[in-house]
Image: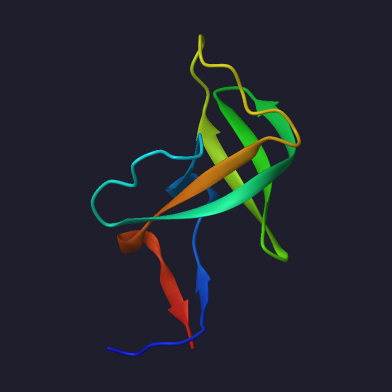
Length: 88
């Protein structure tokens, strides 16, 4: 098993935005982030999330009675390990 820094690629619909302190679940990694922007796109909410010095887009399924995360909100991004592609 290799260790160290690498780059990964994933699709915006294959990650989730959660409240800090959530349980990751099996085969998921949680990374702390902060919502920079959000926009409603019909059945999804697209979040622009700052993670460290990077920005990622997250397409989150919109639920009618679930309030969206507002810009500035501290969140955790859940990455499913089976949807990650390692680049080097």
